[in-house]
Amino acid sequence: MDYLEFYRLKEHPFSNAVDNRFYYNSKQHAETLVRLKYAVDTMKGLAVVVGDIGTGKTTLARRMLDELDEERYEAALLVVLHSSVTAEWLMKKIAIQIGVKEPGETKVEVLGRLYERLINIHESGMKAVVLIDEAQMLRSKEIMEEFRGLLNMEVPEGKLITLVFFGLPELDELLRLDEPLRQRIAVRCRLTALEEDLTKEYIRHRLKVAGRDDEIFMPDTIGLIHRYSKGIPRLINTICDNALLEGFLIKENTINADIIESVAITLGLKSVE
Image (cartoon, rainbow, N blue to C red; front, side, top):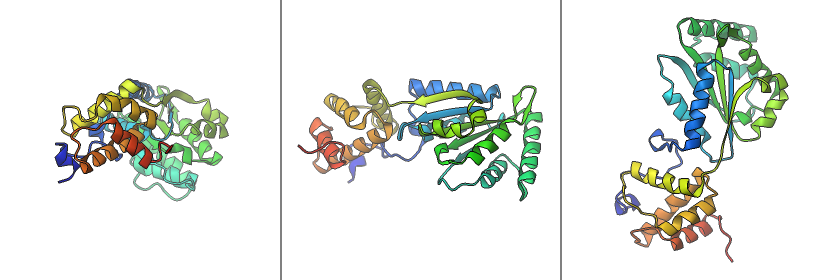
């Protein structure tokens, strides 16, 4: 028996892997999606979402991609894995992601074929959207200038491509590497930590998706979880996952405050006095 069977769960409710089934549509996430879709549908060109580590930027990016109808949008999501990405590689990657089969080798070829593809997308009645997660890793003025070049591709109705950057707050400073690009930001959103009442709803939501309708976490645990996680969803997941494992090991049918305190110490979120 593991804790799933012990707590009558169908799957792990607090995994930090991105899974849209567990997406919690808080007010700020719902409003952010509305703003981003507005930027896309009105061909504004550039939208930016910033937030601290663990506030749900990647989850939101995946959610947005899933909600962009394939019959109306040519959309792609790029995740930047390291800071050594070059402008040439990035432009070629974007071209491939939106359907350019042979982007060419030189910068002129890549941009030329990218422009042709964007025109084709527009003439077909669709809109091109590229979401870039971990955008703060693109620490190059040259890359910022290339983005500005993409946003110069337009038709009377607006920009031929909409870029949506998701990144840490430092992304704001990075965009200052190219002031004309920064001034092109049409929509800017910031994701913040959850309040205590939303932390409670977030936990309840994930448990329900995992197959448990009744409460596992006692009322006096919510304030503690919120305090030690600071309302950051990723930390909420980590605390709750560890609490369920601890509860299983000591065969407690519900999670109480003592378990949360113990887990907080183990995770280094609370100092031992």
